[in-house]
Image (tube, rainbow, N blue to C red; front, top):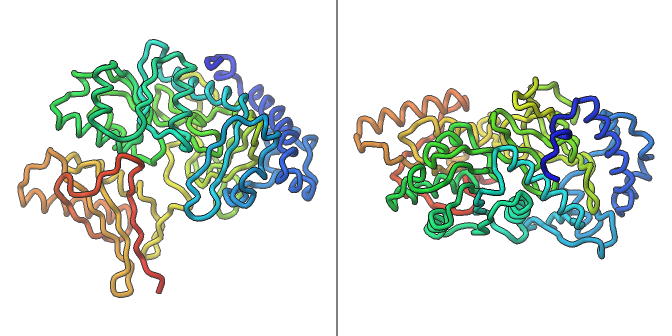
Length: 432
């Protein structure tokens, strides 16, 4: 059952006791996989060494490279005849990462996603439209099965074809969308181009957003454009997919479902735990998976634990909005930064649209950055105002990045539009 108040509001001592019990079972289960069986034997790891949840730190980390090196089934802990589905990455730079599920795993995943949806007010009376791709991408099927478990009427629209999406929204009375942030902005723009006011002409009231880092400013802009409440979702295929963490109605951090995973935040360089409130890399251990448990998986996603209790009453810890990825960090002119820092500034100006592109290239042996951003419909075509806007945004970017980027304001529709995951950065630097 997806709605289990006793689990979601369990007191911390009891929740951590449950985690320790499930961690011991997970080690026992993982030892059936070829990879962990060999690793545990080499390092002398057994379930008996887990006395409390803090003992997870005694265990070795698992990385994406470990999954690739054991492609396709070296991490699987049950006979393949007990497995019913697999998902994988594209594998464009080598072996893909493969995640295998038993029927029990899929049932638990559906419960997990349904729990997220129920938490933000969705019920069996809702019409849920999924704009994510299906197939190997986990976002489509993860939300599909979660919405069905909730009992909502589902519209598996898949990605793209904005005019068809809008027709479905109007004709079927869609109340909730699962959508990536960049496409939410694009879909709203198409609605307005078609003379449709989402707040007046549709029944939309909720959207679930994930798959891309996005700023609070972008979220608020999307909420205003579509007339909805937008909730941030975190998931990754290695942890099943969507539903690992989700915002509650407070919209102040994402609750990590700690009866499914043990969450740590570590310094990505030293791999030591960081204090609550300090940004580090999220590390996750599955404690409710049968076919392919993962121990201390390094997600590369950067976030922080939010201190204090959530007013919603749930006791599962919250993580802050993700700041980017440790492997997506851009280093330019000796400065480390993430694309989301740039987005936060751009989205703070109503005269700017939601489509932008960061290009980094080598010019005369120097690395340079160009930020192109489209103007919104609110811009008045006044040259003096354009110059002032450019100066103001450039100054804010300089204050944030500690160097002055080149900024180019372009007409709406000038930049390539993707109805899939947006390409925000093109790094064209040459090795010299």
